[in-house]
Length: 199
Image 1 (cartoon, one colour):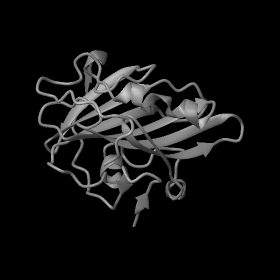
Image 2: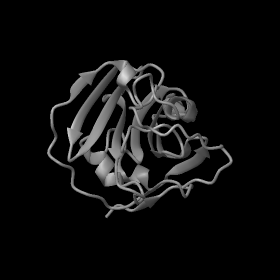
Image 3: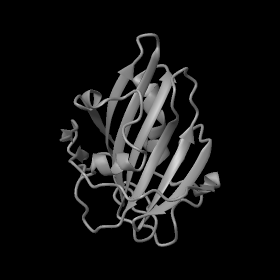
Image 4: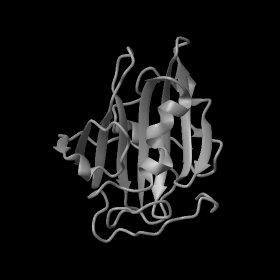
């Protein structure tokens, strides 16, 4: 059983739900992305079990196998419980390489103006760093699509550099505001002070 907690109270993980059978991903234009990470290559979207999912492809400038990406899915439940790690990972076919469950036993965390960010780190010992980062974005943190109460985000990013370099696409300045069409009509525009308490 996998039960984890981050340094921040804003993100926590409990054993989750079994993922629905996957449906076909559809390519969307970059201006439909819910967030605006630097270096965005491709936006894919699908509907699963009554929710919408996006997978954003990021560049991989390392020799490590596997894709760098940001996976997001909508949450429509009023006052949703904490982020479910297993449910989030089911949308990306499980834990991405090079991470193992042992890596997830030591999570780091911090708060910024977009809420709580938690991540695990992996280093090659030769200058390559990978992060598996997770956060929940709520209406308190950013504009959201209509009838959506939160966006759950998982990012795998490996870079020739530091953990801060690898975490850059998940930074508040890239996730707190959607791209041009990312927030649908009816989304809240409330902005929370960085000094406000996390959820």
